[in-house]
Length: 79
Length: 156
Image (cartoon, rainbow over the protein chains, first blue to last red):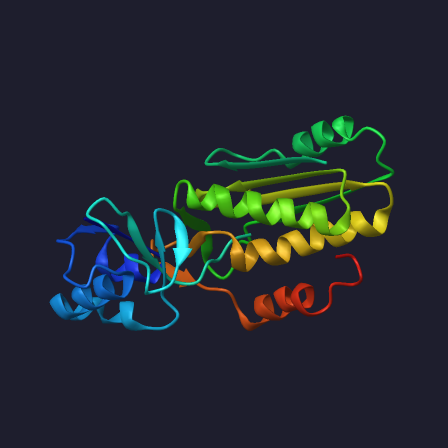
C-alpha cells in the first residue's frame, strides 16, 4: 500500500513509501510498522502528527485495505 | 449564497479578482477583501506551500461554506496559491459580500484565521542561500483561531 507524507514527516521520510499492509491493518498499525522499520520514522508516533485515509482526516483506529491511501502530516499552515 | 474557491499554482491578480467579484455581487451593500502577500526581508525570498491534491481543495471549500453560512454572506471568494511563491506575490485572496459591512468584515477575518490553521497546506520559507525552514502555526495563529471557536458573536 502507498503511504504519503506532508510537512515534517515529508522532510525526514520523503513524499511517499510503498509498504505491505501490516497485520494490524489500521492507521495506528501503519504508524507503528513504519516507526519500527526505520528510526527516522519515529516522529510518526508524535501525537501532533495526524493522519488521513483516502483524504479524510481520521484517527488511529481507522481500518485499512491494500487499496487505502494513507497520509501522515504535521500541522496545517495556510494563508 | 454564492461560494467560489480556487487552488492555483499561477499568480493571483488580487485587483482583477476583486473587480470581478464586486461586479458579480449584485445587491450587496458591502464588499470586504483581504490579500495575503509573501513577506520579504529576513533573507526570505519565497514561500513554498505543499498541498495534498483533493484534500486541500476540500478543506478550503468546507471553511468557505461554513464561514458564509455563519455570517449570512451573499457571496464569498477564496483563492489560494500553492507551490513556490516569491516574496511580494499574493499567496491568498478572500472577498466577502454582504448586505451590511459588519458581516463582510467578520467573514473575511474569520475565514483568514481558519485558513491559517485548518487549510491543508504545509509551508517552508526559502532563503537566498537556498535553505528551507519549516513553518508551523504560531501561538498567535492559534489565539486568532480560538476567537471564532469560543465566541460565536451571536451569529450562529
